[in-house]
Image: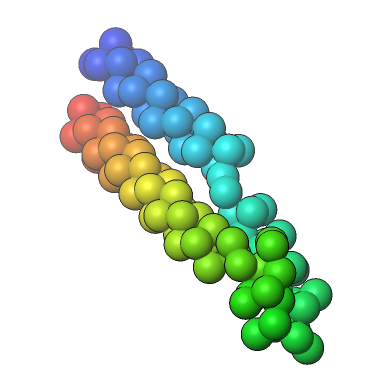
Length: 94
């Protein structure tokens, strides 16, 4: 029984490490920078988006960033599901 629990714990640790990697490489900081840029130009946002070199790229950048964040979320949800299954497996063994 202890050997089986050890095997499942190893799998759980792998899932946890994968979640840690996703979070450490998260693109959330990029969203923070993009919103700060928008705040900087709040008074002339329309002009910034229409005429500014950086501002003109901001909508496409945010769309691409949203896709990346959805991918991160999906990976985290998959790993959380795996972690839950590992814990349930341990409960069944014990």
